[in-house]
Image (cartoon, rainbow, N blue to C red):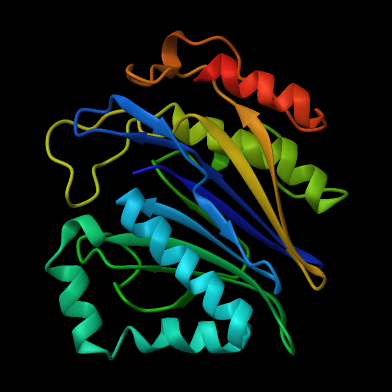
Length: 251
């Protein structure tokens, strides 16, 4: 399952994703970076779903953008809707299923964000269609959107990148506190499925960058239990050595 949050601002897209992988009953098996960024062009893709396959898929799309440009990658994603072989591949192999938040800086249209997924049972967004999202995209588990205003998370004020590091990460905390409905391929009772850490990708006209802004106190071999946890560590602003030490403590 996992989660991502994407916010479109006048000068950037801010895209956050968690970092836990788990088995069928919700036990954490590893921590991963679930948002990929382009090396040469302003693109970032966050992943929900069958992590290993989805991560390889997202990396391939970022490589396509690096080699041929953002527009070529967008056109490739749009082609999924009419490409029957693509649809059959993902519909017949639940382990290859994907749910992507895509953030790009379009060379003529500026910041854009999209969602595309392969699951026919997900509500609101039809599968294999590249859906443009105007402002806020938050996928992972249900929360009351009014809480974003009650907690002062919205509206966005001041520097958008600083907002994403702090208030955007709070949206991930809200979703983490609720058991998520299982994506296709996961059987059994819903479980807490947002964990590990929060990575933030920032996409601007100059390119894409990524940093870790939150580390939860999860452990490999255990289930996520947000109701009994201590407050998460906000690692925004820590140097590399301090972040490495934090990751060792959570592994």
